Amino acid sequence: MRDVLSTLLAVWRAGGTAGVGTVVRTFRSAPRPAGAAMVVTPDGTVAGSVSGGCVEGAVYELATEVMASGIPVLQRYGVSDDDAFEVGLTCGGILDVFVEPVSANNFAELNAVAADIEAHRPVAVATVIAHPDTSWVGRRLVVHPDDPHGSVVGSLGSPRADAAVADDARGLLAAGRTEVLTYGPDGQRRGEGMEVFVASHAPRPRMLVFGAIDFAAAVARQGALLGYRVTVCDARPVFATSARFPTADDVVVDWPHRYLAAEAEAGQIDPRTVICVLTHDPKFDVPLLEVALRLPDVAYIGAMGSRRTHVDRLARLREAGMTDAELARLSSPIGLDLGGRTPEETAVSIAAEIIAQRWGGGGRPLAEIEGRIHHELSDRLTTY
Image: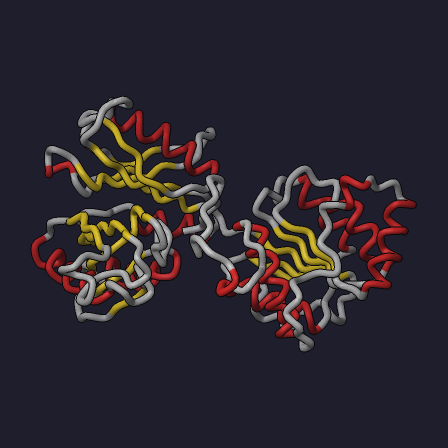
């Protein structure tokens, strides 16, 4: 949703109605995950994608109809003898798309939701996508974390349904998961009939890049492309400047180990955080890695350097008291073997290793393996 939010808000603020198609459920090799969205504006402009091109035309037509009728529709797209050529998914997958009209009249909370997303505040939007009583379809709750300032805005149709869905949505939001939940018509947990799509808008995961070198600029660009909130940190103010790292969200002048320790103490490091140590200078990277490798849970820790640098670095870390189990968390030399040489090619190899670790990929050519192309992990963390 993040990539279409500005287009949707422009229509909303102008008092218009947009047609929004959102992937709510996928099966087999669907090309886009749950939460991917496409917006059709009143003048026919399109933003976003639900399938990478396979069914966009059909969703466009349906969104146009929904804008005119005001009636939301849950539509399944897949391959069959009748529709494979016209609107089928050539990849063989199946996806459910919920297409709804969105305006200030039926989604008054959109501006506040957008502000939460922009400010990196977690928020979930729960929308009824199927119900025996069609008047319930399209109703939504906006759910914030369960803290002293947490709140629920809107209603699905009954206090019982609101309470059940809000409770479950907070659980999904805490895990960063986006999915469809099933209830009885009045929110009964063991019933069937009502389906609610919970879109968890968790803050973007962080990428911390240490070392303000040319490779760091390329890695920062890759991180931004992958949806990370990128911070570049270096103790040298002459190198750590926003002008040198225009794609980074933050550029920090501080000793790397001190900055990382402070961020961890402040609760700013979570299991989605990736750490790229590009200094390849012992006085910076050894103290930094002592902190990083002792963090309880991060997604990735990689360090740049030659194999000789790697051996020397391990020796220094062992002298500092690091255990073999702690050192096993380190990816060094950083990146996958792509044969790259330039900073940009190296950044691609680092991004590839991060993706492979996130999804459990082996880094081999797809032509050499069998089975599913897209990996599915039960603890996937989304940022839509």
